[in-house]
Length: 400
Figure (cartoon, helix red, strand yellow):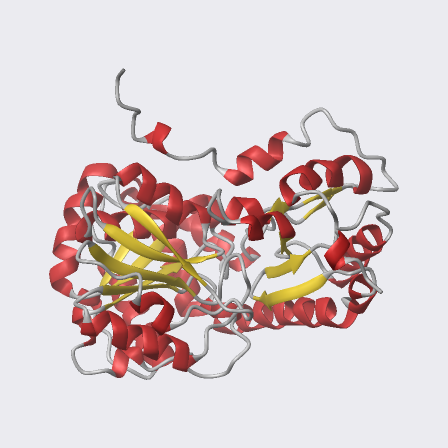
């Protein structure tokens, strides 16, 4: 029998799979679909940024290949932004620009791990990280989290082998919504450094962190370039999802390896997206602050309204950035209930089974709700529909 191809070694992408659940389904005008399946803004970039992009389209260089690791001006601007945000020194040669943050992850793993190597992924995990590791022939080692969805260094220590190459974190977390405390990041950084591993921190949602100031001090640690790799996306805060612009912050020596990957798969990140990201960094700080305020307000609305679900046996396990990670009270698995939600509640959400190993029953108990496009009124509608569900309860979880 032939060996499975690289893509056959992993599962169907969850978001496209969930979208297929609503194909051919009609939703009445007075009860439209509540879509909390994808963590990406659907509104376009602000008008001023769109005008800047339109002007850039008239410049010949916008339509040409650019430097493999990104436009120099963008790398310099992001280095300044990163230095200010983390109260540390980051140089332009620490920055690589990629075609989105998923590509940043793929390029990073291609540069640090080979077939048969291992990477620790906290569960629930971001499914695209797991998919890429599968396709690269790298073993994903599930790192269980505690009751606050936080990974613990001592738990991770027991999973490290001679094939371990990295620990991967996402903070604020997708899918869990949790903002990792600085102490958690520091403990895992120290563990990675002790074992000669890379600590990869995907900070795609840093612009929506509820804390003020730097969320950690890892960039200020002596010798951090030997251990720390940060990933970022311009898709969320600047609404540039379709223009595919991400970034890697790492040692220049590692970026030389990443350049090989980038030149092979993309040559360069999209020029128009890079120009837009640069304009955003230089002109939209106040606008991004307003976006953050709105997302934080939606998080507060979820906290304030959750008691109506708690009364029905639901539990809020994690909340932050675009996400609420919730435990449902029903007897059936979340992957079954996800399809029922479409038809019986007009809600599209991703089941926890999409974020967990197949043999981990915890996924069957959870859903991820992404509220990137759901305002306070939409949250009220979502919770009203969920609280009205009259499905059989799991015996141990039935509310008193």
